[in-house]
Length: 510
Image 1 (cartoon, rainbow, N blue to C red):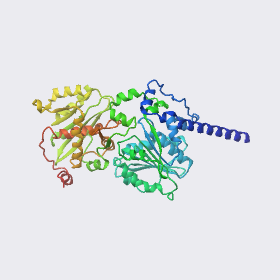
Image 2: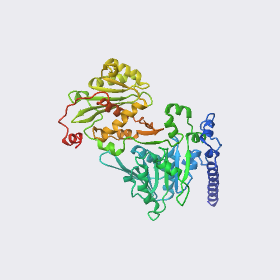
Image 3: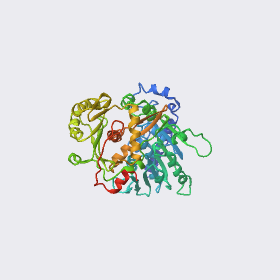
Image 4: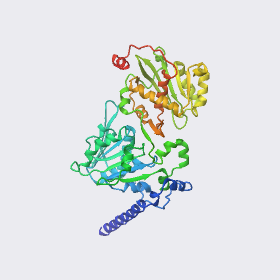
């Protein structure tokens, strides 16, 4: 036994020495000091999945930390109290930071972490990353709880994992009211995309700077940039003065690939097809400005049980005026057809139809009867939508007054000026409480993803592409708002007296 103990201690010491050497090499990698113009060409002939420097992870297979790539390893082992990481999309931001939190929960029983994210989906996704790390570290989940505003589809207040050793991790949407008063180590993921990151930071700062409340707290801000002058930009650019010092990590897509991430940059850039978005999301540049088009609080004011995600066409034929917005998708994104009716002065959602990986002929068959039942339709006539749009106007007629065509379907090409027409109009309509939309987490998250950006003095609108899509529901809703009688033509409407009086009052603006 003494021999085995000595052997084990020697193995541990040997691994510790390897880890220390790997930390030194990763932190001292010359790539960290290179400008983008220098580092970008290095990726052209780089073999994917290898490291430019020859660095190798020292942890043995079976240890979860053996999965860390070089730039993740460097970030993971930086134990500074205040740490901000500007990291490219696809680089494993949450994977790295949740690993650090899980290791901390295992090493220090009774440790508390709070994870905040700009959306419910991102908060829960990050928490799931933490669960995977905890399992790898042999942490046993003793309890899991979710708290919501009401039913299962209402807005998330918090989700919490309690481990058997007394440590816990709580995930919340990143808003001032959800983080205020929480005394815990902080992981703020995609911090710069919170509805109001500056206000959220002000709300939480007092609770983490007082060491008497559970000891000294660590702060991890991980994000892609979201505009000059924003909260992350100010923290990143803050001079190193006084005692409040930030450890900074910049990981562009080029750093990540040269340090082992097996991603084809040119293929990714081609698929992304957005120079400004690429500069922000993958090169970590602070553009002129960006903010959320539809904050959670605004969306919540329009949610109603009177709105539905599915309906029978026969139910709508005798009702109020019916209109549709169709955002066409084929391979990467789904097609979304948003149908609504006028009722008591409101626009009430009747159906949010999502078609994934459906051929154009099949989509035409599915949409045909719905378009027949509608009074006006605005269709996404961009890219692959052009072919189907031509079929639709041939069957249902085209709305194009300037060409003296007064059919049913308006073909909408998504230029920047067109986006500047439909998205602000949707926001104004929702601010006036003209819309009733379903109480749905999927819809809420999709609407919240749409961003309003400012580049070179010009506004534009774009959304991150997630596994659920590309804010396709938001685009379909904006098209439906246009079809409801926006710039092209007014609509008459008839009231439906079956709606509850409070909804008629809301529609009248009382």
